Structures are given as structure tokens and as C-alpha cells.
Image 1: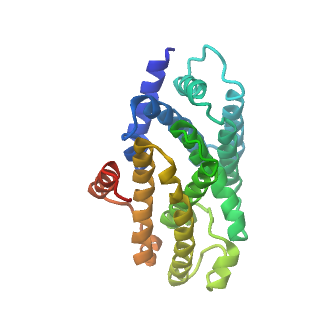
Image 2: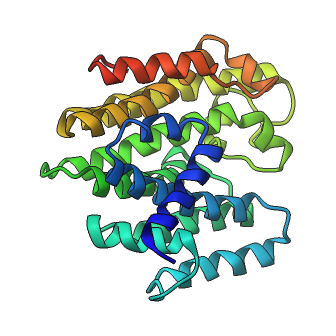
Length: 278
């Protein structure tokens, strides 16, 4: 399979599946857009295994198969996602070990891992989202040595926002991410059962912490070129705006899954194009 066909397949996956990520990717030049779409497509494959309907043991086998397929990626593969990732790696030196971290994070989901402390949760967030930040940074490129840590921090901020947004759905699926120590500190059971007012108080508490991670992570933006800055600003801005909505009404996430309307996402992306803060 040729590289252009593989990239086109990854862009189709990104366009179809990336509800927030896609707004930023569209702002990149074609080569970077191709590379970042390949990163997204492989990450989507890993996430879909973790969230799928197969038995846990089968999911873990499939995750290991993805890991094996990356080290090394077989020459002449007919898998368009792997062909695209291989091409992006040749051009941008993607740190493929970051996909191993994502796989480990998804394996934790499959095993039903919960988190005793906020520090434990941050480790998970670095696995599933900091990893994507570092892969993305390889595509964007920067010479500043602080950028890798900042990309990782921004990934943590985005993942914490995801966790707060999805708290109702995750609880229904038997997944608990919010730290047990924080839950108990505000009078919420560690399994998030019981009165939703206590869960809303826990969500409000974690919103404040998430703001701190955004404050650090957004220091990455001045270290990037204009298009990369617009891309990251659009993605981060959408999640930050979602966090603000959750913070204004923490109880809402105990009742339904919040999302931003498309017009608001376009507005955020537009601000980033003209150089305003997200």
C-alpha cells in the first residue's frame, strides 16, 4: 500500500471519529496533518480495543498484538494505519514507545484499575494522554527543552477534563477514575455511588486541580510555530471551554454527558487562527 493512500485512510478516520481533536488538526499544513492523523488513527484503534465488547482477556491479547505490530512495523504492511505511522516516524521521528504507554493505560482500563490518590491518577493520565502530547510534539517540532514536559502536562489537563465530562458514563460502566482519597475528603463514597450532590462536590474540587494543569500545559503554546500553536490552541481551547462549563454547573455531569456545540468549537478554532488566546 502506498503512503498517500494510507494517509488518506487515517485522515478519513480522524474526520469521522475525532470530535475535538479534529478541529486542531485541520489547521496544520498537509504533511503535519497527515502525520498527526496517523497518530490519531492508531490511538483510536487502541482506545476502541479497550472500550470494545470483547472479554477482558481477549482485549489484553489484542492490545499486545498492537504493541507487537509497532516493534518493528513490518515493511510492506497492508495495514494503512501502520503504513502511515511508519511514514510519519521516518519523517518526524515519532517516539513509538509513547504508544506502548497508551497501550498500558488502556490495559489498566481493561483490568478495572482504580486510583487511590491524585498522584496515582496523574500517572494514568500521562500514560493515555501525555503520551499523545509527546507524539504530537514530535510532529510540531521545537528546540526548547521544556516543551516535552509541557506537552505531557497539557495532555494530563485534557485527560482530566475527559474524566470529569465522562464521570456518569464511566460510573455506569464500572470505571472509577477520580481518586478515592479526594472522594472521601468531600464525603463521597470511593465508588462514586450514593448522593449525586457529593459527586458534584468532588467534580468541583477536581475542576480546580485541572485548571492548574492547564495553566502549566498552555505554556507550551509560545514554544511552537504559528500553525502548530493554532492547532494545539484549538484542541486545548475546546477542552478548557468544556472545563469551564463543568465548573459552572458540576451537577450537570452527574446527569448527562456535556459537550460543546459545533459553533462554539469553530469559534474557538477561529480565535486560534488569528492568534488570540484559546
